Length: 495
Image (tube, rainbow, N blue to C red; front, side, top):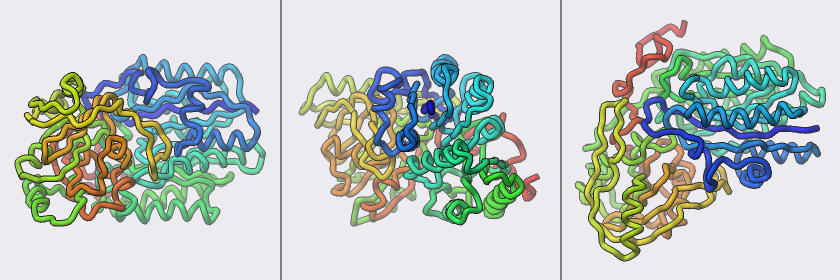
């Protein structure tokens, strides 16, 4: 048995100004790793690709890893990058194989396509019509028919923060193995509802997603379904199928699969009001922060999250923290390659005054970057490489690019050259900052921060700043998404 195992992952924010060339798909490498380098980069990590590798090795199969490409969310993927990645996978399959295992995202938009994953799967089916294909997807998948119609098995994350990436690969891969061994005949049913759940209401510690994902797990544990997935969708993508969907895989019973799928969708629709996020004005958030006596307190800059396509250089929340006079604050992070180079040239121990952040304009929401002038000392210089401690993707190599810790006396600001969400404590610890000993942690994140900091955070204050990850849909111009759709349109019938 020869199996092709590959990764191609990107969550596309169509409102983001951050470009997505092929180099963005490499962490710690000049380009996405291929062949043995791809195998070595992801073997033993908490990823779906690692799960596929372990399953294939357990079965004694020959493994081919043509490419492992994973980029932080940003603007639509450049066509040249998409072609390079898909060509690598398709050429490996064309060389001959008995199975394909893909670690994808499900919300990739390219310069030419709304559904990057569906385009890849369609090409693979043209090359190898009968080869079984397993697909692992993110919970934020915006599901299209081309994905489902061309997959043999399909599984999505059941946790947000995503701490079951490896488990998702296992679920998709085990179903494929049963198909190959003749032990099951997977059939897939899928559907969606006209809903754009706010990302800030999608956490699996919260109603209603908590209860929905518990039902998904129960379907699989009881044997009702081989695999079941409720996708919350990624709303910052102005594409037709953006929003909530579901897919259920059963052993040969398509009617049952559709019934279980509809159960999940109907339950999500019934509680549609609970998916709407209520925004607190920043002034009120800062006032509350000033009254807190015990830390760490997370000050969540959720409008500018790198893992949702944010520039990670907006300064609205940072400026508010400075104006409020808060002290003992660790900030992660301001992505400002220009400032990083200036601070590196100044050297450790040097006092510097410079405009920080605000280098990138956001024309999709009508905002220009606004730097904030800061004075401080260069405390530490790093290459920006670290590995996650977990529980989110333990062992996975992360790459902030050249990085500086800039100390103002009241704030330790991590200034990075490459967007990176703070979903793991090691983004601080690798730089000599212990987040558990800080009174305040300003984090540019939305839900993923919970994986790394829920065990130490005494309180979380959600700060409405500025950025293309805004939770205010009125700031976004939706032109391609299907209408009517809730809550852009106040509808009571899903159609």
